[in-house]
Length: 292
Image 1 (cartoon, rainbow, N blue to C red):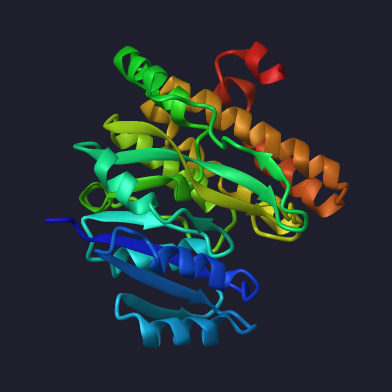
Image 2 (image 1 turned 90 degrees about the vertical axis):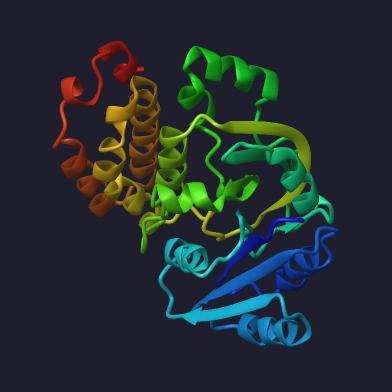
């Protein structure tokens, strides 16, 4: 019997892209799915579009909340999912018609199956990257054997390029932090610190759209501030691994650099106050790495 897959889609003001996204899900060759759509307080026609699709497809569950961010929307999806597997899809992107079928057949006994994406510019359709994650399964298997899978997988943050075991997610109570940007970082790091039962398939079944002012590419001051704000939570995960500690440090230093590039004095002061709470020795034993 084909296991049920819960596809969770947070939606916020994406009327221009929503048809393409939902059609790619409804037309999946793997039919045993439930489609959980959480509208995050859209002010455009997104809700009306969702209602039309829900009327025509019984597999759709529709929830509507006040604008709270993707973290809360995805968590609502997790808590209302009934599937054996969970899959996240961003509402301005779309997937190939065989994607869920390929993932279910590929995950085997693993907790997570990672796959890949094609990235393109919305305005021109130009391909930015034909392979979003630069990894392969042979290297992943080797790194797992050496105990280095956390270091190898940490940069592969996007939640949309994985199929997850629902039992694994719920057993370890892995949820997205709510109300902030960068929620996917903490979610993924908690995943890889709780399992090494992860595999990768060379399948570019996801189409990632780069567009101006999206939450991923907008680079807003709030986005950067939220990522700095998450510093305490991220550093609390580092006791699991020195590999993870190094990755988080580099991630935070990159965010610091972005804060200064914005030339916003309030943001710079906030960054200084947060980072001054930690000295070099507390953050990383390798001072050369810190300076780099």
